Length: 223
Image 1 (tube, rainbow, N blue to C red):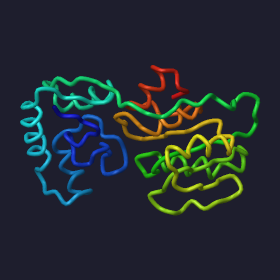
Image 2: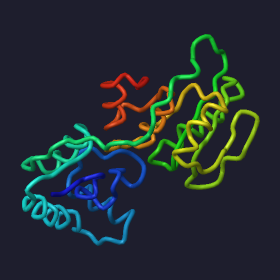
Image 3: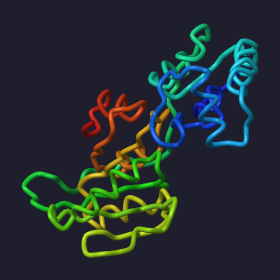
Image 4: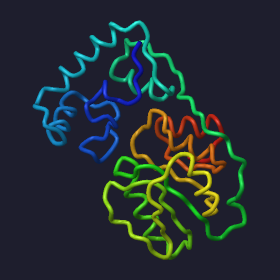
């Protein structure tokens, strides 16, 4: 049995970001080779041999699993002959009751959770924080940054790392009414979405991959 949690079988750059800038979709071998040369130490021509080796492995499996329907479709763009079963990741988080609402609040407490890098929509978040003086929304980060350029200011607070057990208390204490997950590449499942929903907070997410699929299917917020 093989469980595919990310897109490593498709590309060594596991999040399918072309040159670490934008989602690549279903690129040609030539485009893949160019990206690998720019972003890794792999030599030209590696993309084809990478896929060949992985196809042999996948064809030898009795069962292949992935955690979402969108992940299955994404992997089958590269390997259309492979059969994949979908089993969502489980969770032992205890569901919390909703404690707040977005309705009738001019300014809102909005959170970003998890490890934030370029693939997690850092540029979008940068822009939101920059405009916060006009919107009066207060933004909170619970997690870590790829760099350390975000400093605490009037409308932004960096709370740092958290544990899953701490998160419900942290979000409630800071009256978080919305969690934003702005990944610019398709997630295969997204644990931070599970964490936010378990805390009783709705999510605003990009309509990509498992994020869009789960939010819309289970009515967890908005895309």
